[in-house]
Structures are given as C-alpha cells and as structure tokens.
Length: 319
Image 1 (tube, helix red, strand yellow):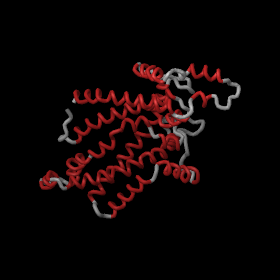
Image 2 (spheres, rainbow, N blue to C red):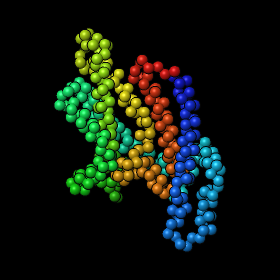
Image 3 (cartoon, rainbow, N blue to C red):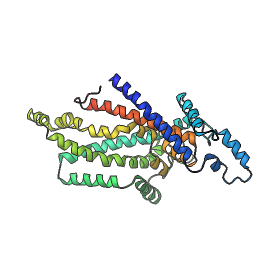
C-alpha cells in the first residue's frame, strides 16, 4: 500500500507542474491586466506612474522570468502577495477554507444520507411508484442548474415568504460561530449544494444494487436464513458502493474548494467566492495559489479513491 501511494505521488508531479504552467499562462494571457483595473478612472496617474506600479508588482519582467520566480516561491510555500489585499495569498485562502468547509461537509453528508437510501429503495422496489418517483426526481435534479434553484430559494423562501435569510453568514451586526442565526444562513446553500448528490447517487446505486441482487453469493446468503436487512447491509450495499466512491473521487476538492456558484449566489465568503472575485480583479497570486492548491487536492483525492476501492471491495488490490 505504501509503495502504491508513493508511486502515485511521484506520478502526480508532472501533472501538478503542467497545471502550474497552464494556470500561469491563462492568467497572464487573458485580456486586460491588474494595473489597468487598479488605475481605471484615475486621470491623475501618468503612464510613467503605471509603469512604476507594474514594476513593483513584477509584471514587467519576461514571462519565463515571472514563471520561474513564482515556481521558486511555490516550492518554498510562498505563493506571493495579493495585488489588492496586500497580504499573502495563502493567508487569504486559509481564512476562507473554514467557511467553505461548513457548506461542503454538510452538503456532502446530506446528499449521502438522502441519496444512498433512495437508491436502495428504488432498487428493492423496482417498478413500483416510489421507484418511478425517485428516478424522475433524479433526472429533474440533474437537469435544473444549481444557480436557478438558488435564485428560486432566495426569491420565494427568502424575499417573499421571509422564512430564511437571503445571504452572508450572519445577520448584520451579529457574529457567531454556532448559533441559530448561522444555522438559518446555512440552510439555503446546504440544501442547494446537496441537490446534485441527491439526484446522482440514487441512479448509480439503483443500477448497481439491481446487478448485485442477482449474484450467487446474495442468493446463498438468503438460503442460509439471513434476514433481508442483514443481506442488504452486509452483502449488497457494501459491494454497491463502488460507484459512490467513484463519484467521491474529488472529495477533498469539493470539501475545501467550495462552490463558486453557490457561494456567489448566497454571498457566502468562502474559497469559491474568493477565486471568483480574484479572477475578476486579475489578482494573479490569489488565482494561481487557489487553482494550484485545489488541483493538488484533486490529485490527492484520486489517490485516496483508489485506496478506498480496495477497502470497499476486497477483490480489488492496490500494488
């Protein structure tokens, strides 16, 4: 197992280097530049002043020199300072991670708690009314965009009915970590974030459970007199979790990176919203650090997924 993980980590190095280069080029070659945005509308600044500002940010060096300087800093865990906040980019990201964790962990757990049982019920009651309802609901849940559901939630339940707050983490003037006000602000984004999993998990799990129910070892378990619940939990469900593990391949990215769409709609100050705002403002250090960290977590998630395969299904060996 240790050799397998070490080999995969070594193989991931070229991938991360390629992501670094691609991210750097996309930020530098995109239209406009940070200096133009920062000085827009300021008629007092001359072109010489803008050149001094560009030099201070290191943007007047040739692209290979800029990339080499940034890569050397990354190897020392120095991702540079934000152009706008004038603080280390890694500090800004570290501040937003706990906020994204609150949303993503609760959304993932809610999706599992609801989606997995629905998939099992749909398979065990194949062809019945609950099966048809679950399948239709899954298709609708996948077809409707998250941003549309989020806007409907805000418009109907937040603005018209006033059942839930419509944005941010807390009511203005109130700052608490664990209280009813924070819970009320979490309900909307958590529900919308869980819709994707609730829609996807039943479809994959239903197909897998139906296939496993026809296996010889399941019939043998029934013939031994085991209760249906024991057979489902011990023999069917565990072997049917392979698709769920596959869907959870990027769990670290999902948990830590947050959702750009959901955080933007609900004005939640998480990592996804930070990336969106940094991209609009051409804040190169923040964008590059965010994308690189998220990409590294994605690669690590895939390694953990392969290890989880062997834990879920003993027939799979990792070497």
